[in-house]
Length: 183
Image (cartoon, rainbow, N blue to C red; front, side, top):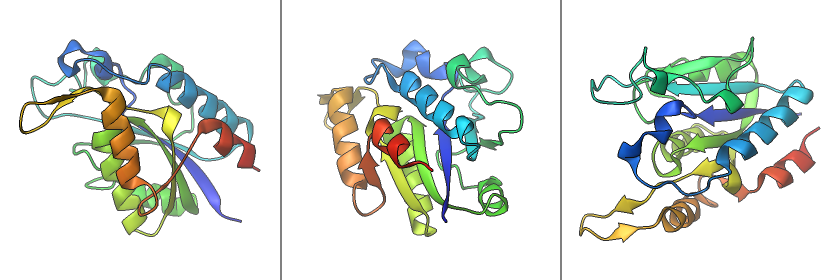
């Protein structure tokens, strides 16, 4: 049987900093908490990814309140925490070692921001041969300006980011559908 891990990417207090602008998907943390409860109830592996920014102006700097995990999705004792400094949770981290040790072959990736760290982590995971699923209701996006200055609503950014990953890199689904298939 394939061991499936839940990956929670960058769900830290910093995501609520006003510098990021308007965020869509207000229920993201609640859906991640629901997935966490299902994983924990079944004693399945959960891995938390924490972004430790080296930018002195970043709300993700280590030692700041922004760097702390949001309380509703915080790691429990025994759940691995992987610290990263780039948007990709595999680069310069021990994530692959953790997954190997847990004998994980399939990932459910949740978190923020879909169009940044979640995307980079999902693409790398797929390229490394993992089966990847993304629950669309457990990832969030923010409003974004493109190179021409056009503002794209977080909901549109979210939909487009999912459509780009769907099929080639991941299976797009919902939290409820994932929970229904858990052992």
